Length: 431
Image 1: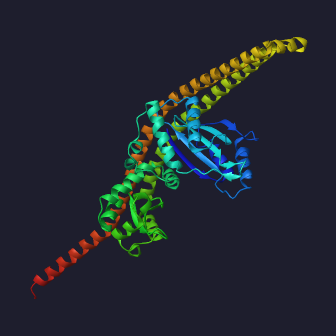
Image 2: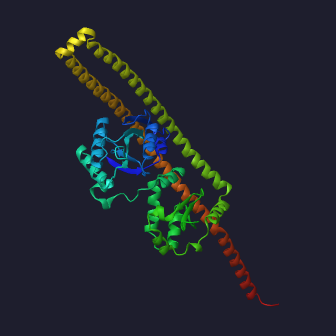
Image 3: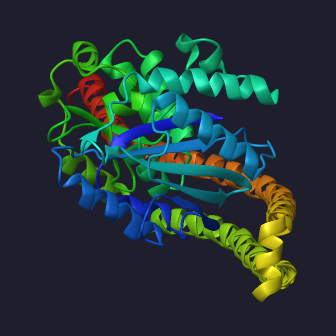
């Protein structure tokens, strides 16, 4: 599993994020340990309240556990990994919450611990936790027989296409995968050694180089979206400036936007609108199927939960009936028979718990398999849509470039005709 953790505050904000159902198809609060509260939001606020007795502002440690995309990981495997993690980080016995998310046919977990040691009213120091998590992640891959990612085999091979949440949100707005955008900008940067070459490379992909308000060099697309060049290329700001020179020599973002808008003729705007509408229509069809599947899966899980609760109640009542009461109960306590029955009941209850968890895991894994099949169709549609949208950007830029050249070509032809007439007049003999 890929393990990513960070120290943080903001209990209410984190709870809202973990409980979001618009970004996740299924959200399950699996476990709350060491809290007086019975729901996630109040539990994390409880940690915040305790932290007021200390100077600690990052009173939570939030961790995500992400198994490989096609791995079927049982609940007990997540729990075992979390136990190893808290032992390694020194968080044993700390109040803890576990939340499961499912999205796009993948299941991952979030675990949040309180860093506040209530005995000493100090924050637990998580020294070198990133290195420890990296080692634990590698061990989990090896223990489960999963193929190690390049970044875990060799730190120097970590994915250079990683992106921030802000970059991901920007890519989401323009409906293009963030990795696709990052690759586009990196390729343009790496194949260009001058500003003119970079402008040409970006323009071919439907982006215009401009002067940003604060970031120096930016790129602008036909939608008016602004991309910070240093961030999307992965280059250092000083390297960008060294290669591209003074950003003051470029048009401002507003000027570039205005220039693009001037050349967005009615025909071109209609063409863009039609292409984008067609892409949205195809996406809506698959989105309907995804929503229908998620709703059906939720219903099946609720039915299973209800059936298991009913069975647990019946089995609990049956076990309670075994324990004798009154004088018979006293006699059984004296003879030790009462302890034997209670131990048997506890063993049966634990066995029933394991059975229920295995039954629920089997249903979840069945749902994940069905969802992955749909996700393959969605990925194919997304790839086609991204190809069309990227091609659309290039077409818009190419069309506008033709508009820019057309007036100058007309002007050249006009000058050519004038020069021809001038030469003809010079050759004409005087009467």
